[in-house]
Length: 259
Image (cartoon, one colour):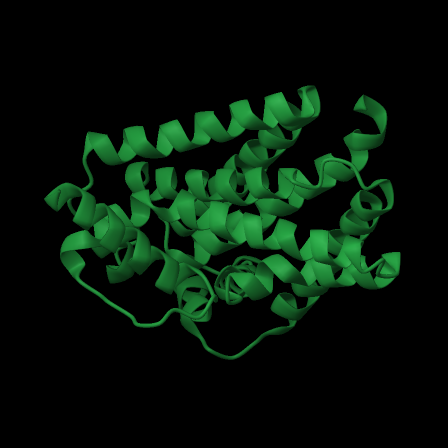
């Protein structure tokens, strides 16, 4: 029973920290941070489910395709409280400055928005909207966004578990405390289960979309990890945004060819 209580508290902390859905109260206890990170994929399932429900509502209201695509493009960022998009912008600013590591780290924590952040934000929105428009136009297998949201967060959890954190990031170090094999196994179970359900739901399309999310995340985290010699919350947010966009693009490109 005590272990179940810890898991529930960890999930609630994760939901409060990584999701923009209002909660009746907030709790924080560093003893449960390991459970919080292990619960991150469950937060992805919640965000993805709300994302899908918004689509169901828009389809039921017979919303114009352009407006529906715009709403659904913004929905995952809004539901997550824009926390990952903020990391994407900060990382883009720092990484594209092409300066020495010390300068990049300074830019990473600078609260001001630079030109590269604005440019990269525009690029991600253009591709997000274009891919979403194609998905809405086809109208098939939109529930795969649940898998996209969950698998990307499984990748983030494993990054925290396995990669070296930046010395300047006390936040990442704190989240890595008390991580055990049970936490890693749980995240792996969620990832494998999500991929399996995606295959049962959409066949090979589900597998390809899942693979696109994982490969997109691996490419993004590899780039920022080598650039900054470690990981931080902003770098994880950058990688998550890229991975979900890759999954959405894969869904847009392949759904008309594999169904």
